[in-house]
Figure (cartoon, rainbow, N blue to C red):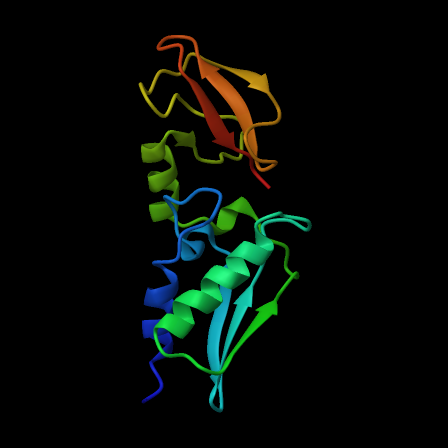
Length: 153
């Protein structure tokens, strides 16, 4: 089998969903930092969203499974912790997918701009902690729906 191009590998990785928020890919999340061939070995650099993220081992397994399903036999995953991941690395496509899914994307101001469902700006924080450590729990005062806000990191 001929080695696939780095661009092709990026496309394959863009189809691997985040295990905690499956509407966005690992590429949209910004945790795939680099893809490169070293001789016959494919090296994929991954930056966890934060140290201790419970999904890290699942993410590694999902990357390996996806690439092996595409015929990659010699693969090495490299954890890259510096620079640390930041929500600035989320793609615009990923931010839009989060909002369409009902999760307010991160904002530098530290809170959602509006309800991801009805777009009302009349929102309040219920709890600094949401369904995962990277999210906070908010509620819209107009449509009364609760929603997660993806915290800025």
